[in-house]
Length: 157
Image (cartoon, rainbow, N blue to C red; front, side):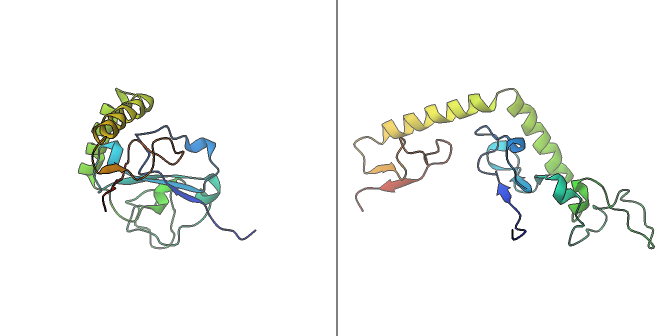
């Protein structure tokens, strides 16, 4: 055992395909608010394992990591017992509002519906490429194919 931690970045998947972090044994799952979640690059969030939450963060933010961010006691540092203790600075509040609004819109649908819609759009795109010099870099029949993120290649080159 080497003590390595497993960190998974679900930015490319969250909101587009079903993701269930509880089923994984990851120490940390991170996600940016942009891509399929509909926010922009100014906000991200994470899910910490219980073991990681018990550890002391290597760096303490200006006041994001304290139990009470406005407690300015210089003699003791009472860190939050939640993942907030890893926060390095204040939040981009407009980004939070935007991501919450995007979540509200996403919740009107289901991730399964979005995934199915993405697959249908990929089928339309691939059908439109027939008789052209372009094709999917990864074939649609491959286990590695993803309908929500596709790369095309020029077959004539």
